[in-house]
Image (tube, rainbow, N blue to C red; front, side, top):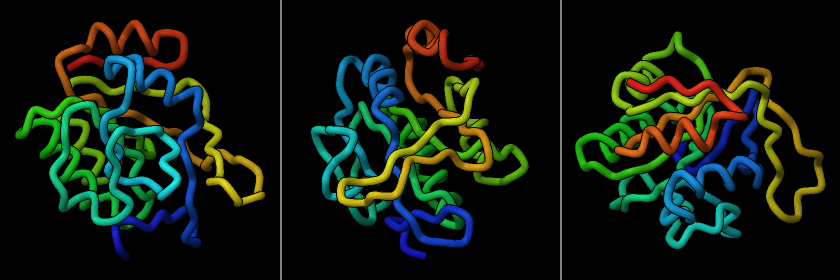
Length: 166
């Protein structure tokens, strides 16, 4: 499956991060998202730079936010996220399913500066033109933060999530 496809349950689908989550992400990243390496052409995160395909093969900049496809592609995306966050020291946040029983989750959990566990299920939205209602997955979500501003992460997400700093 190409990395720019999103899989939820048994179907390929596109789910966008809701604005109330993006507001918090922007606050952590200094006011704006500079790169969304895994987005749709309408740029729902309002990122300054974006990739709509093969974001795992392009260079990333600090200030990235990534809500990668939920499915088989998560293994490849987790390696890229950890590489950009740790080896290249690029500050950013990844939003993924909370599935601690998987190898890709272990890759992210052991490499990040903080884990952000949402207290409630995130209700994802559809891209423009898709009239189906917003929905929540059948599993919780977690965000992995890479960067030096863990105190800011704690402060910004205090009312919405439990934050575990490494």
